[in-house]
Amino acid sequence: MDLEPGLSGRAVLVVSEADTASAMGTGAVPVLSTPRLIALCEEATCLAVSSLLPEASTTVASRVQFNHLAAIRVGTALQAEATLYKVEGRRLTFTVSASDAAGLVGAGRVTRVVVDRDTFMAKAR
Image (cartoon, rainbow, N blue to C red; front, side):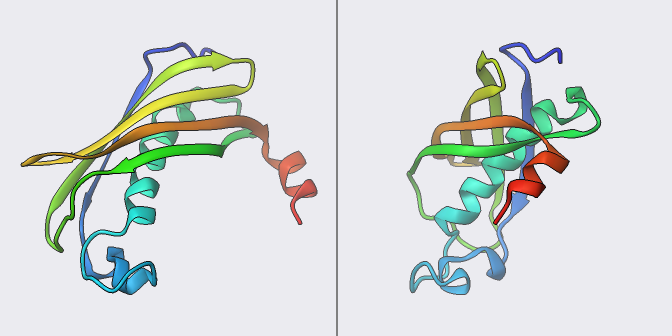
């Protein structure tokens, strides 16, 4: 694997009703939910490295440290960026951030682990 710090990925989203806290059951307001924002950032981490992994491998999240900084309305366009910060064997640590036209919406770190898909699924409960 040629996974080196500095690799980056970008994911985009236009917030829909399905992305809101009220729709996801994580709050009573129709703004972007924190779980959906984290998922967007995780998507960016996957895009940063997926093309460089062996065919039978993938990455799975093992840790998320994240600050959701701004409430975002339906219809707002967001962009998430992930940069591979550290490689420790199979463990990959990314810095992530998400922003809209007005500025930073959320930021943090996501740790993912490279796994063999078949072995991982055989161990899943």
